[in-house]
Image (tube, rainbow, N blue to C red; front, side):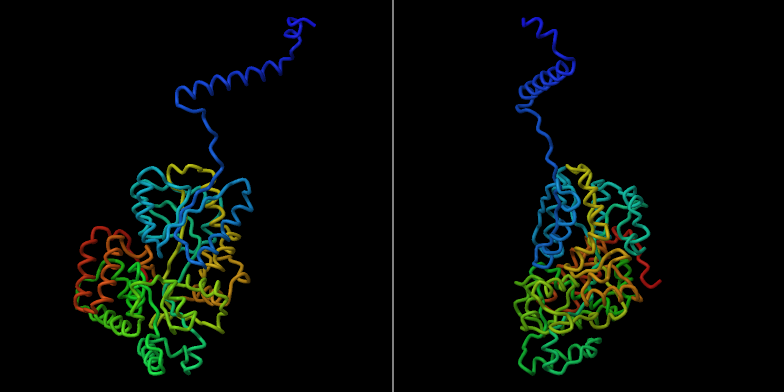
Length: 446
């Protein structure tokens, strides 16, 4: 057969295929000379940033990622955790990345004021359509919906609800020395128990961290809450103006007494190292959010047998909210996977995988309670029956960042010098310095 006949005999489909190949080669060569390399297909990835690095936290986020990978097995997941409890290191890292146009596909953020700088700068995309498609307004409680919306738009998906005002205790120590947990509901009762343990040889019955400063502010925040919701409402609305306010003075006097029973090396410990002291029986108490439950969980401890928990003294009937969220940054490299991740984060399956390990409760009202441990079942009931729900300052929700940052420094200084008058003045000064940033009005008492 002649060459001419072969050409005439080629079918149209083959000729089209050859044309496509030749075109691709030409485009590739042109791209190489114009841009230095041939264009590469974008990898099918999901990159997420968070600050969950302790044992219980890592186990929880890994469980959530496992739900995502089960649904989307072709997507590679890159986790980029940034160590530093409560996200204080993470925040500065993330703000720099987002401002430089290097935002990941999603990153962790606390609901409330912590979101505001990102929203104001236009770094987050509204996700109202996603909320509508998933029907989330009917499964997330109003207080949580309010905390993730700004200017009438939703900007984040809550993955959990943590309770900040929790006193954790080593039950075996309390049983050994005949201390009834019900006597710990007041500060007087709590300090009486501390004195009893000290007399028995436990010199420092309270474990506390302080390496990030926020751990100390966390305790003071719960003492503030114990002074009454009216007082705390004035605080988060920037309405306190008197350094001699007896409620403010009393709060710092309580913290001064509290420090007498705290491990002297607190400033060198992280929050989870403080919890570990209680787990090992080196201390009887620690005040920390219920992410601490995850530490007891991974240590193999049994709630009600090895350890217990209750509202921190003076806060019964109050639920101090810490809500972790993820959102869709503008310019996400893998926008489709960003949305996929948010669907999983807000799903019942995702939340019921994450929260039983994390120590938190689901942000959804339809959680499968059978998947949760005894502490969390009690917390779910407390959440439903709480008389007051209040936003945490330390964990990004309750007050502007400028005040929250100053609060950490005030707390750290006070733990060292115990100067009540100076601390009270510093709080009022910090409120005044952040006055223009108080743009939310919290109605905590109804």
